Image 1: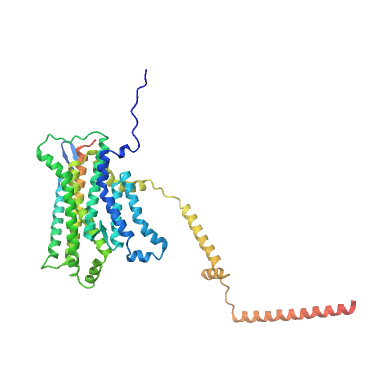
Image 2: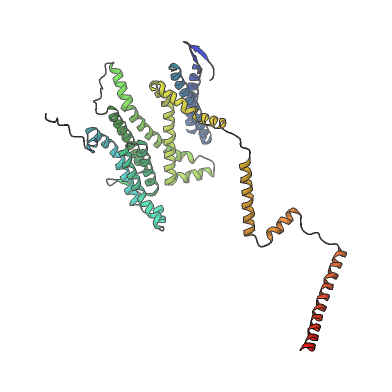
Amino acid sequence: MATSSTSGGIQRRFAVASLWVGIALIAISIYFFLASVTLISPPTQAVVAALLSAVIGFVMLSAGTTLVRTYVVARVVEQNPK
Amino acid sequence: MAAQEEPAPPSFLSKYETRGALVYYALVLPAIVAEVVFSIAIASSSGDLVASASSNGAVASAVQLLPWALLTASLYAIYSFRPSLLVTMLIASFFLAASVANTISFLGVPLDLGDAVVLVIAAAFLALAGFNYGRGLKLLGGRRPDITSSGPLGYNVLGIALDAAVPLAAAIALVVLVETVVGDLGVQAARLPQPLSSLATLYLQTRIGLVFTTLFVAGAAIWAMRQFLEPLVLYFTLNAADAKKELLGEIEPTTKTVRKMALYRPSGGLAWGFLTVAYCAGIFAALAIFLPSGQLSRDLLAILDLRAPSPAPAEVLIQSSIQNAIVWVDIHFAQSQDYIRDIIKLLWG
């Protein structure tokens, strides 16, 4: 997220959009976790699909939280430039 | 003027005998007790690993001494205030006991794997709480903490909940989640296609497999918890100095690489030339030493195609004729030498 905007005289390099994208990724990862539980619950017995769904969930959770974490850290630094 | 009496300096052990220190010892004590339980289980085990190791004296001694070494390292961790070392030693002793020992018993009550996991998690949680308490004592430096709050009651309740109830609830939820998932994995493994089904079922029936699976599931659950909690905690607690450190830490590998590339100065290649010559000389010397006599020169000549040219038939004929002539000359020269020697004997005796 290298978009730059100006707010209160401080040049912001990390837009709020990165926060919302991160939250959206976390929400999608939760959906995949729930889907993996559904896939191994009766009557469905798609174990391999459930494992794949869980892996996708872990990857999206990692990506989303990394994005949110980077946004939070950058926001704190930008609010205290000195 | 009488000298004013100075207060006696505190003894070396005084800081280890305070009320706060006793609370710290009490909170980390379950971890040590758990390690002693696991060590006794390993030492009194007659499992396959110990039995097979008993054929080798050194290995058997190492297996028997390892839990006590872990226990010693844990006591050092408590003394030197290293929570990560203590938790690592606790999990290592648990892993060793679950892998080697036949039965783990606490005060005569046998513990199954689930009970042992609960014991480890509870001991680790209390130990971390103890280290947190000790860290607070070190920060206060003998002063009394101000725990009064002028805010609304809800904030106080929220503070207590975040400080104590949430970690305890997270630990209990982790135990329940791990037990549920590991218990359900056996059912799910049977649904896999063959031969994966048989392999997964057999793996989950072994003790090592169960321990590995439990640790993997617990690690994945803790990782997911941390992923959810870390941004929230950072959002409410991060200050500018720590944020800059975090950012610098994140870009440090990249800056190291860039700095290395910027400082890179290509050499003239002389060092590589020396290295190549030394390498070739080493190979040549090794071949000269280890190959049969003459083999190296023959091979080198064969490689360079410098072997003697094969003679033509006429040259072969001439060569053999010349060799026959040389032999004839040698024989007649020797005979002439004998004749001359006989003549000299006849003339001069």
